[in-house]
Length: 476
Image (cartoon, rainbow, N blue to C red; front, side, top):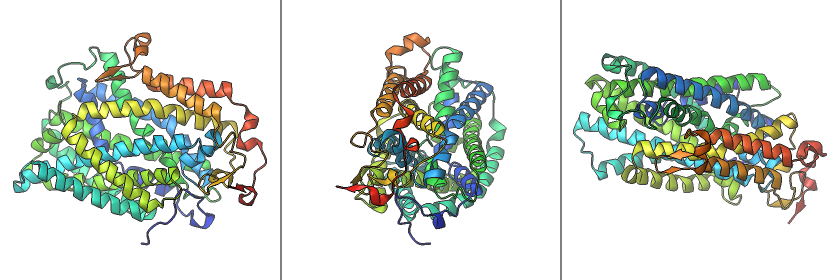
């Protein structure tokens, strides 16, 4: 299969040969991995019981999917990725906000997937072969996972899609075996080792779990969905079918692995750590399937994240090729893996990461969706590519390539979110107004959307103007 050469430019109609089933396959297959499974461990580690953990994960996933899924329709119309598409609201230079948000999201999830997958691999190999859990062992395993991940990401969408189809079947079988393996030790009571509710009370802790374990899953895809739907043709597939496929792919692709993580957390009594107890509690016959799940699943998920990172960096640096951008972010992601392994506890690192990125990502998604709804999905695909072609002008040029109302709305929303967030090492001053409950994602989205509606004028966006052709754009 040839290496994909296309970056964030407009995908021609003849190349848009994917369909809704492919979207479900890639969302399901790529998420059946330890990097997603581990999020199901967070509620038990917060001190919640089984039913409280399940309800928080399900409620958060459904809420996040309702917000995130419509973003898939944007790239269906623009035939480019979501950060570039957001130039319709933020301006062709202002869409760098989306590129940076997407880059940070994908960077964190890539590092987390390789980190957790590598830790489980070292543990499983230790029980199978006596491999010592030394720094050298972790370094080699992390390096092998990163190398395999880079290979898939550089070859591009078609290779990742084929990989996801295989993983959707293979990982499902491995997880079913895992339920059988861990079932004898399963319990529904809260883990005493967690030390009670993390935030001191049930509802604050439950809401934290809703955001950190449930909502964070769909929000991780706010800039990723367009990487896949840009290859779907609106001439052959309706928006309704694509939206339904996105709902199905996100809900199944997130709930199945996360609930497996919750189930195994109680069975393995994993309170302070997940990877170690998971391996220790595994029966001997499941160690090889667990090793396969940790390796293959991690490569599939991290490959998609790294692919998205390459596109986002390519969008930030138009002169760089997608392959060069992918190699660059791979080095950074691998470095983050080692920092996470040696410098942070898994619970604190994961909780802080998802809460911060949810707070700054949600207002960007809301502003982008408001623009999509206001103009019924009408975009000028050629004008969106001005920055990528190192040109200027067009209906999304606004002022110097930036739409200030949208950018200010995002900044205010993100600022409010950061002031209302509750992290293991930091509590925002606005928490006193919410009774100590982390409502950062809700407040950031409401503020960002409300300010954008107040500041923006419909006639200033692309759908209200006459489309311009690429030839009409003025060269620098």
